[in-house]
Image (tube, rainbow, N blue to C red; front, side):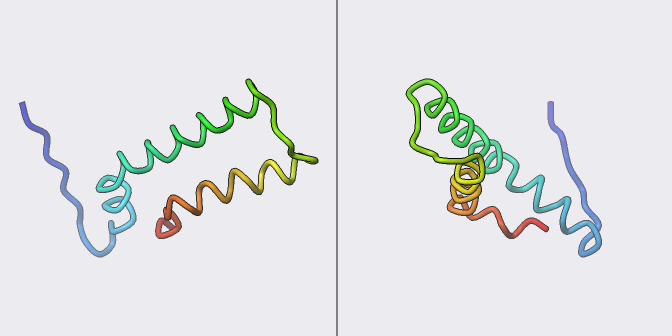
Length: 69
């Protein structure tokens, strides 16, 4: 069995990027979830919710997913 995706470029470029890099994005989300799990299970030293959110944003930016608009 095979599946084939087709995109009309350049107008579907955003959808194409998402389909092309979907497994990368899944891995990024999985890694962030694992970090959150560690914080909840073993504790953390965040002094505020804002600080925790900044850390999560940092993890996402480190994964270099910012090219998706």
